[in-house]
Structures are given as structure tokens and as C-alpha cells.
Image 1 (cartoon, rainbow over the protein chains, first blue to last red):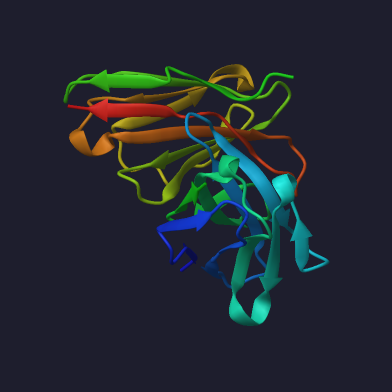
Image 2 (image 1 turned 30 degrees about the horizontal axis):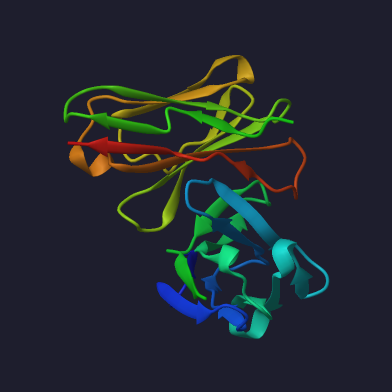
Length: 114
Length: 114
């Protein structure tokens, strides 16, 4: 069965520190992979996506993610976190030919200390 | 360009009552999706419209939930009668008709059944 695992429910980092949010998926075919962010009072915003090609994907707000097929992972990274990055982050895998039937992980809530 | 809008943003109803959630997709988007997040768990797929037709309703939890998409424009999700376990955040998303394009999410409707 398809699934997405985000092992870290809560993460706290200091402003300026680096960040890595983990995501592992289980899906039989080539996955379409996404990271979304939900800031307080906002909807889900797409940070980046992987459909094919280069396995290192650049997104908005300085985020990047690397697709590693051998590890079934799609970890999200940012070299220097800003206070405004405090939010909840969701990893998702798209099935059904990329038509956005998404399976989400449980989310990782990021807190940023000044 | 207006994004995906959802009404209401919050709703508190008593068990046994009826609630109707509305979603206005981005103009011209053929695909419309409903998702739900219950009690801080994963965001789960409910159903997918292509224009006015239900393409996939495999995620609908039971027959108390009825989704419609009038004329392929806005969509409504009715819960009748509401139960306590229906509490959560209901997200709507839309995407254009061609594949490999991202879905744009609304802010969600927080439903509380008491």
C-alpha cells in the first residue's frame, strides 16, 4: 500500500541553523513527490515538486529536496532557517498519473527559536 | 488571479446537524479535489472531480458525505447528519486539465462537531 512517513512530528531549530526534514515513501511505481507548507492561518502552499529528471530539486523560499530512489526518501533541506519558516511541513506522493491524488505524511511542525 | 477559496473558514455545529462546505476553484481549472485532516493526522484524499463528473470518490468515508460540482465550477461538500468524528479541516484544491501540474489548495474549512 502507498504511504508517506514523516518521522519527526516536531522539530525546533535556532534561527540561522540548517534544517533537514525527513520523508520516506512507499509506492510501487515512479513517484511524483511534493513538499507543502502550511503557515498559521494559511492554506497549503507548494514548496517544490519532483516529477522526473534531476534528483535535486530547488523550491521557493530557499528550500531544496533530494530524491533518493534507493532509500525511498525525499528529504527537505534549507541551509539557514528564518523565523518566518515556522510552520507545518507536509511531504506527499502523487499517484494516478500525477493528477494530484496525493497521499500525505502526518506533517512536521517546525518551531524556530531566535 | 484569485486562488482557491473556501467557505466558511470555520463552522461549529451540533451532532446530527447538517453542514455544507463550499469551494470555489481557480477559474478554468477542470480538476477539483477535496481532502480532509482529522485530529492532526494525515491529510487524506476524499474525492476528485473532473469538471462536473466525479472521477474518483474512493476516499469518501461513508454515505453521510455528498459532494457536488455544479456546472463544473464551484463544489459543495455536505455532511448530513454530522458526527463527532467528522471534525477536522477540510481542504479543497484545484488544478488545470493537463497532467503534471500542481494543485493549488485553499485555506481549508475547520469543522467542529460538538
